Every structure is written in structure tokens, then in C-alpha cells.
Image 1 (cartoon, rainbow, N blue to C red):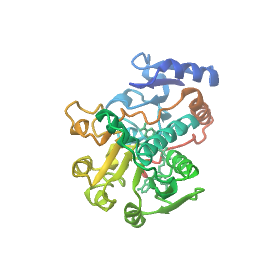
Image 2 (cartoon, rainbow, N blue to C red; image 1 turned 180 degrees about the vertical axis):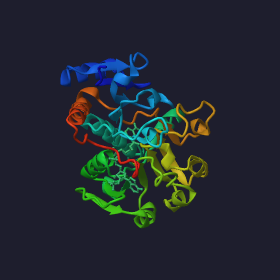
Image 3 (tube, helix red, strand yellow; image 1 turned 45 degrees about the vertical axis):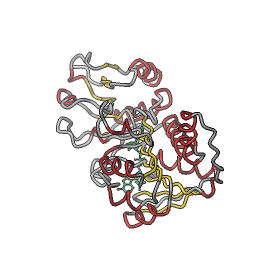
Image 4 (cartoon, helix red, strand yellow; image 1 turned 45 degrees about the horizontal axis):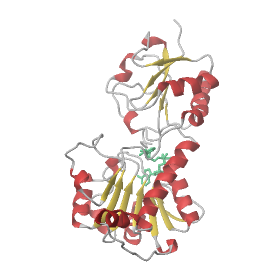
Amino acid sequence: MKQDALVFYSPVDDPSAWRDALAHELPDLDFRVDPEVGDPDEISYALAWLPPKGFFQRFRNLKLVTNLGAGADALLNRDDLAPVPITRLSDPGMVSLMTSYVIFAVTRYARDIHIFERAKRRGEWHYVHPRPLSEIKVAVLGLGELGANAAQSLAAMGYDVRGWSRTLKDIPGVACCAGREALDAMLGECEIFVILLPATSDTKALLGARELALMPHGAKFINASRAAVVDEEALLAALRSGAIGEATLDVFNVEPLPADHPFWAQENVLITPHLASITVPHLAVRNVAESIRRIRRGEEPLHRVDPRRGY
Ligand code: NDP
């Protein structure tokens, strides 16, 4: 039996872009797109985004599962997947796309663009005197591959940036802190919050009614990572009362966001359909191929997810 084939699954990514990019790096790789997988016993690698329940059950010879994105939460704690190494994608294209989203969302609030969008709808010339960026305190929660670059870029633009992570980081221009105790103080100090934390058992509903209430009245809230990190009901209540003034949300407990979800009716919520960042095949493929080469040589793949830590 011939082993060493790869199965590709994604409801949103174009398999041919990945097939072409991988063919360039690993010309001998047998690339199969679900559901045309042939003999499942020949599959050694999976490159997958949000595979449905039971997807991995038939692949008994898997040696590596690569998440077609940064947040690998959908691949953890599954009962259809044996304990094979799971890796995440990491590519400069994904980092720049996320940074562009964060800079857009933060700057839209910092430069009062959300106010002018509404004034335009009323046909009103509504002058708001701009504030210097150095007076605008922005918190970035999560300083990993995406959060660190976003925080550093905001700081380079002149914002007053604070960053928070599990372990202490050193990022030029960013006042970093770490650990649960440091979080409350930071929530009280900043006016724009950017969430770039992974969904794990530790971060589940980390930002609930209590934490939202610690933020200054009218704070701006930007979530570009995972909805599970936030108590959605508490956020909705805070947005309705004005305690949270504005939100930019890219991720939701249920996606696509149901047509009758109250977020749609909130004028102070900007909704984007989970695309703050995506992986760029021709930039990410080098790492995917290198991990496959390493697995073939019996070595550790790149960017391995720690299932106990959850990211
Ligand atoms: P990383 O795994 O590189 O970084 C995660 C960061 O969160 C690290 O700084 C980590 O701390 C911190 N963190 C994790 N757990 C805790 C905790 N309990 N308390 C405090 N800090 C914590 O992830 P990325 O930066 O690559 O991506 C972040 C998330 O963004 C992904 O997990 C994914 O869910 C989401 N994402 C969303 C996209 C979208 O389009 N909306 C696209 C891509 C990713 P430490 O540094 O100490 O480990």
C-alpha cells in the first residue's frame, strides 16, 4: 500500500491554490481533496479548516494535521482524532492582513470615522476636533504572532499601546503586562480594546460582564480572534446600555451570524464575516512543506500546537 498522501478540507479555501503551491515545494506529494480521498489508509497528512465532526475517523495512518489557519481550537479535544502532532499556519501574509484590520478598526474609532458615517447618513456636516493619537490608549489582549505585530504597528503610528499576554513580552513601544492580576488594571486604563486571544479553556468567556464593566464608559471593543473569549450576551447588554460604546466584531458564537441576531440591529456594531485575516497559500506553503519534510525524517514539525495549553 502506498502511503504519504495529503487530504485537504476547507469550506472556504481554494484547494487548487494550495495544490499548486504545494506542488512547487513537494512535487512528489499526492494531494487529494475531500471527498475524493481514495483509500483513506494512504493518507498521512491533513491540511484542514473546520473539518466536520467525525472527519478524521477514517484516516488511521495520519502522522500530521495542519490547521489551515492560526486558531487551531477546532482541531483540539476531538474524539475522531488520534494524538498526532497538530500544527498551525504561520505566514507573513496572515500577519499583515490582521494588522491591517486592527489598524483600520482602531483608527476608525480614534479618528471618529464611525461618527462621520452616521452624520453622512443624516446629511450633516458634523465637526469633531481630532485628538492626537498619543492620547488614545489602546489595549491589545494576546501578543502572539498576530497580536504582537498589531500592537507594535499601532505603537509605531503613535498610539499609546498596552499589551497583555500569558507570559511577559518585550515589544518595542508597547507597555506589556502578563497574567490575570494585571488584566483588571489594564481594562480600566484603556479606551480601545483589541482582542487577539486564542479560544482555550483558560480564555473561555474571559471577558464577561465584570470585565466589560471595568472598561471606561463608552469603550470601543474590537474582537478579531474568537467569540468564545467573550460573553456575547454580556457584550450585547453593554452595547445596548452604552457602557461599551462601539464594537467591531469579526467572530461570533454562531457563524454565519443568524439573520435575526440582535447584533445586526445595533447601530454601534460593525460586523465583518470572519475574515480579519486569512492564510495566503504561496506565503504559508513553505512552512507546511517543511513540516511534512520533518515528519518524513521523523523530526518535530514547525509551529506545533500544545493541546494542553490549547494553542
Ligand atoms: P498565538 O498562539 O501566536 O498567540 C496567542 C496569544 O494569546 C499569546 O500572546 C498568548 O500568550 C496569549 N494567551 C493565550 N492564552 C492566554 C491567557 N490565558 N491569558 C493571557 N494571554 C493568553 O496566536 P495568534 O496571534 O497567531 O492568533 C490569535 C488568535 O487569532 C488565534 O488563536 C485565532 O483564534 C485568531 N485568528 C482569527 C482570525 C480571523 O480572521 N478572525 C485569523 C487568524 C487568527 P503567550 O505569548 O504568553 O503564550
